[in-house]
Length: 109
Length: 117
Image (cartoon, rainbow over all chains, first blue to last red; front, top):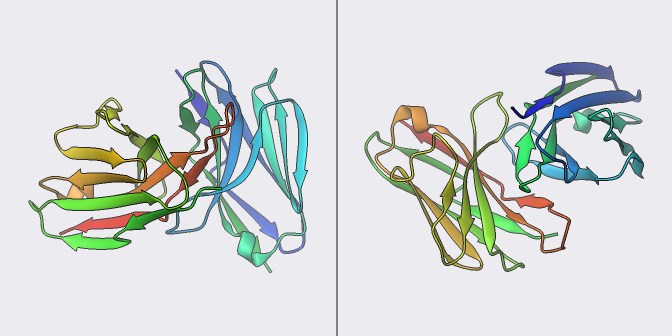
């Protein structure tokens, strides 16, 4: 079956760095997305990786290793507004998005 | 990216009634829209793929006669929850796929929170 694993919850301190990991086993691979979702709101796009390596976009970076079925989202200089759920999703061979359950990130002052 | 709206944002209804949720792509012609459902503290669950001018494709376990989808134009898809029951209470989100070949980013609507009493 298809599976996306990410930690359920993480806690970090304002101003610090946090890395959210995602491992996947899917039928085919056409890219991996990271989305941010605040409570009661729809997800918003953060990043898209289809080739191995690190993609940096401001305070957020996303890394992909296709051979390991692994990605991480790195958040730097954490702000209180970064408290949200972070969803990892993989586009499989049928171009269907397979979603992880999300990682709830709690930022403490 | 595409701008997607949903209406209504919140709806409360009595058990047994039907509720229609609209999803509009405001600046993008979407041949394909997706409907998701999200229960509290759970991930998004794809319900169906809505195709303009043809029948929707439903995921396994989703009753097509209960969740009616109509994609009558390139900018509008509707989801009707028929004979709603309390267990249908959920957050319903639609999305459209970007038109760039090989890049399937989804743009989400703001969601509709349905509460069935």
